[in-house]
Length: 225
Image (tube, rainbow, N blue to C red):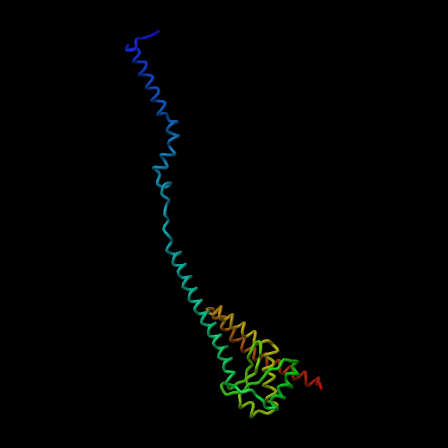
């Protein structure tokens, strides 16, 4: 049945059709499709990341570690610099020392060297800057002997002096002493390392004396030509 376009029935049907279309546009399904976009715009946790304040305890711990590392580095560099300066001073002091050329002293030294089985020549230097003899030089070793000992000591005393220093050479004490100083430079903050290095020096001297005594006892029991 057809109604005139301006009849009340036609107007009522068109009004119902418009209401139905409006309901479809505003349906919950359409709202769901638009919800994520609206949520992104309104939710501050998504558009603006949450800022977490740093822990003050952790910051203090990091600062303490940095300060300790700087102090350790300063101490390590200082000890290494002191070692280098000592080695350079010892090397430069050789120019002020006198090479021992006394035939008797050289003969005693050569005899001790042969008995210890050392073929490498080890020169003897004399001076007055120290009162006790010692051996120096890792690659090119040399022995320092004070002038008083060289001039006033007899053959037996010189034999014991040279034997003790040659025992250091045989036992590689120069290299071990260098390694101990390097360990001290790295671990200088540990008091236990200082005690160990000090005790190592004392034990090294006792070990050399024992080595010399044992060597001469064996040599006296089994003399060679």
